[in-house]
Length: 299
Image 1 (cartoon, rainbow, N blue to C red):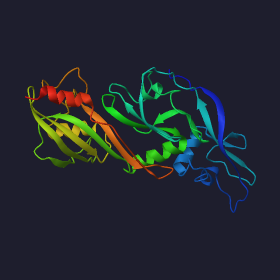
Image 2 (tube, rainbow, N blue to C red; image 1 turned 135 degrees about the vertical axis):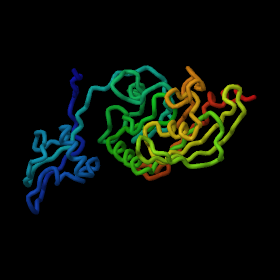
Image 3 (cartoon, rainbow, N blue to C red; image 1 turned 120 degrees about the horizontal axis):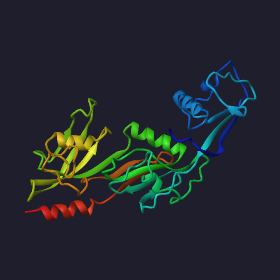
Image 4 (cartoon, one colour; image 1 turned 45 degrees about the vertical axis):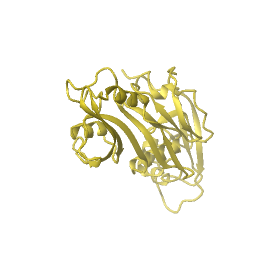
């Protein structure tokens, strides 16, 4: 049996009074673009389905026709905050709209469990002053649990919507670093193999390669995913014969470094701020674990 959703209170984010109507119109059509959070008909219908639109004091429905002086409210059904998970998380960037953090490896971003990145940030961030502030920071995208690195979490409804759109339109430049088995033939290249029958594209650059005690050779790659398919980087690296070190799913059996984690890190994000339009560029150094491993393995 699924757990019941608990609302602690209802908060009105924005209120609108219908002053004039040129012709009969349904609420679902009138509300498109009325609030910044609801720019499309699809988003309005989803908000109605979630009971987040109130019409004259009662929950709205898509079939309602409006009259002059009707009142439409966009509300936030404040869910009970998730339980706090005590884990130190490095905050790399934070403002009133979103936060960028460094997710440690082995931690899921969110989901129906206690030990998540979102839970670890409950009550640890600056509270947004926006009228559409979320009650806790919510992830805009995900990293595999095994992958470490940069994750963006929104602090307001508008930021979540706009950042998700930037990801969807590929306006956020992402950079990863990985240690892989072997040495690619070319120093730079583009991988375009399908991922789960969908188009996918990853650019790569070889930063360093060494002779290795265990694997003949190892390489440090910088990766630029142009698409965001599930396990794209892991599958692409394995597909060209150079699986990521520690990858138990796509690595070569018997040549996988066990119990040391996945040597893949999201190290850079670059995009225009969804509100101010200023350039946001954050980056992390190559993890010391990667560097030390290459030093130890070098012949």
